[in-house]
Length: 202
Image 1 (tube, helix red, strand yellow):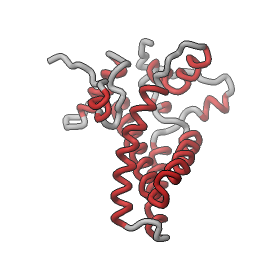
Image 2: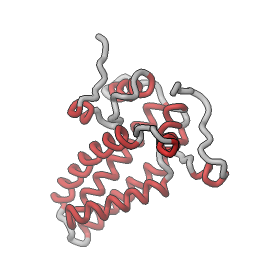
Image 3: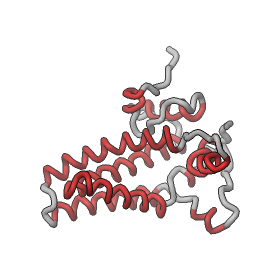
Image 4: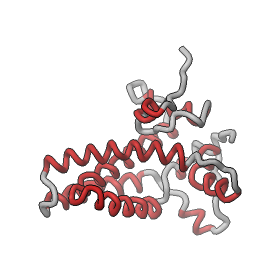
């Protein structure tokens, strides 16, 4: 789908749903940073985890998020559109973003949807990690907030003159040259590991 630098897709005929599909990037970033801090504080204050455990599992959660980000982008947001339902879902999730990459109000899922996902992840990780979940999910949510920030900066501003320029280039290749590579947004780590790094000309 050819990207359009201006404009915005209409996803729903219902005006309420259409309005809910847009969000200012500061809202979800603030929500998830506050929840992440709250989880760490609650876990430590009520002796579910120690400070060292909180730090260690926080970084583990952040690392886990980078894999979730990659897998979701590659296999959910870029799912095969071999049926009308899949095509519609893919366009709602991500296709509209590829068509209108400069639409700043569609660079994040609506907070209500992402909070539901975060709640589901909390209960899943609670089963796996027990009381360490407070550190792990805090790291996952912090990773998501950083992903949103990087994603917004890449689309809203010109490339910076520092090391972050590589993330801008990486994501721009995915949008404007080859959507089958460069699935990592906040980190190219899993593109390196799983073989989807773009081949750059010298």
